[in-house]
Image 1 (tube, helix red, strand yellow):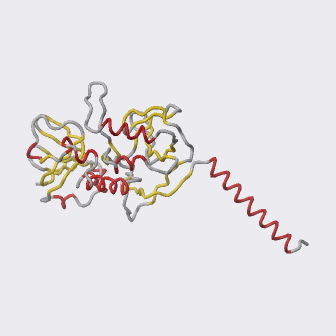
Image 2 (tube, helix red, strand yellow):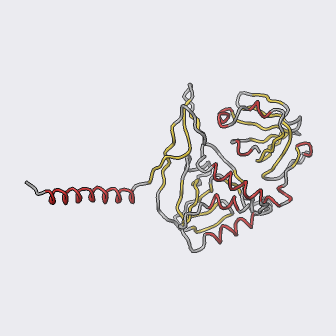
Image 3 (cartoon, one colour):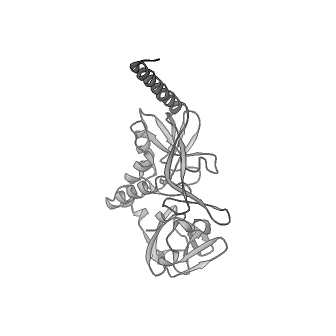
Length: 285
């Protein structure tokens, strides 16, 4: 029969073996953690995602790992290429364009690229993923986190070098990105002090519209619906369109009628009529 002190020793050795095995697994397997992204299905089996709790929802488990990479090329403020060849598109943000192909540079584009290039000097990054891992262009979608645990997507927004641009179901950092943008706006940093990003009353829209990412403000007059969209009508020239599958992300759309709101995104033109696709309520201020 083992003596008590011998039994205790064997227990401790067994305990340490379990701990060591767990640590080895953690180093070799992707990390999984519950997020603040929720998923549920409607009665027809359609999937829905939200960054706010829903009574029928479960938290989405997102995969990540601690592998570190060197950035080989900085294309602009929100797109880079890693040493392994992967092209990374930053999630949750949009930085002004730099000149490429036949498109002119937007104000702030080169500043965002320079800021990011400087941040990436002498450091490596790890990738943090959301619900979708790639986009339609084959680029990897991710949040870039430095060795100092700085989420560069959020930092770009806080510096006023990027605007929040949420594409559901990628909702992991909605709250942090929105808070960073509010800070940049309040302190008039970067694009928020640039004349080309000033908010435009919808009544002043001309037939040429507005190039690039745009801020418009006006009163919602009414709501109309189609098979695919619900429209917030501002006037005969402009309306916001929201896909039916995204409506659950928003408060009651009828609550917008009669209110003056600002919307942010890209204008689409059909003859003399303009619309803006809004995917998330963070784009409606």
